[in-house]
Length: 230
Image (cartoon, rainbow, N blue to C red; front, side, top):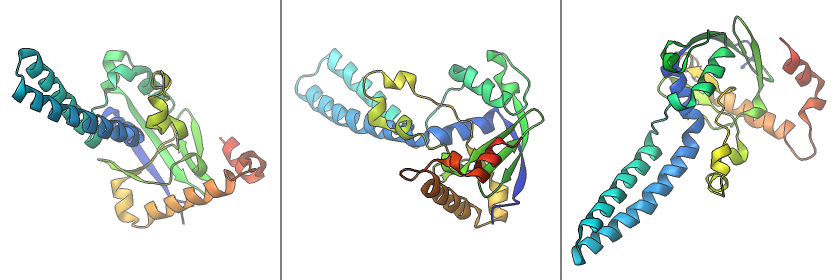
């Protein structure tokens, strides 16, 4: 049973990087695979072109395609997500969990301590300054393995769609917010072998119950009361 499970989390910038990567990994993986396939074919074509009609420009183009191919592979396997370019998002996440403010050049000093409590409706993150209630139906039921533990990320819908983000300039408005991601520390998962499966089942059940056709979560008075609790 998930109810009653409670644990403390100490999060620093590297821990947040792992959490943020988990939230973005499915999108970046699809982007990386697309780049690897596209520039892989272009690299092969460019190599053949160099063999039959070598030139400085052709060699330079081949090296560029190889670099982009490597970039695609890296993005597909382990994307190097830069947090310095997302300073506002990082500061906002830590501030929501009681961390003191920090300048763009001081992100490494950010630290947050909060308590996570699981329940029938979702999970609660409680820090010294705020309480956040995240319902199960807001999450994706597929767990993501990270360096520090297991994550259940936000169900982003079209935000996670590569096709949608490649249309026009949709990519420029993509929401990368990671507030609401459930982090299950490695030690906790090791002590509770069935916790990941139980959490996944709770998310699936909640999404069927509250997000089915014609259903409105807010009409569930118990859920509404839980969401409003502080």
